[in-house]
Image 1: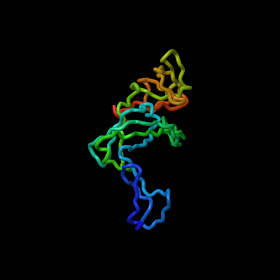
Image 2: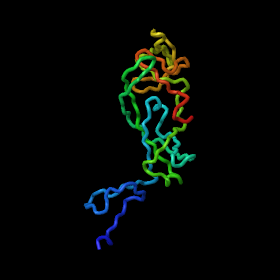
Image 3: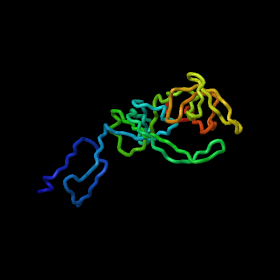
Image 4: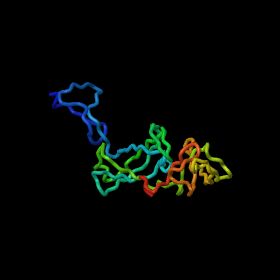
Length: 212
């Protein structure tokens, strides 16, 4: 009689992606029996490097491609850019190596409503392209703010190591900052150049995971 009368009803319509109990298990009120995913609320969490995070903004559109749906793109939107996560790694530049702090930012992308959403399943592998993420001018670099000497509004000088000697280089200074770093523009700087006190980081590489 209990089997015939018993029934379960989820509080929302969705897809069962995990069963937390098996036949014969003893359960009580409040136990989790299954995990249900609402198809129109799929989210992706990405770890974006500090070298690219300045090119991403909340509300930015993205294209999502799945291995199981080749040739098809699903649209989405950046909903949250969370505080950074810092990881220790090894950095090697201009013949010098040492420990450095690699910072990544958790970025949450919400999948837009559409016919393809019903075909998604939790745990699928996805590739995300940020649309219109080239918000920085060409030849943009991150340099330490304490290594930048301001000459006038929008103009500054950094000391670049050339053959072991600090050499002054005029750069265009933007108003974009990230912690103790500032974005400057210079066609003379090159990937691997070392600004006195730290390593410059190229923000406009031709090969990057972001769409133009």
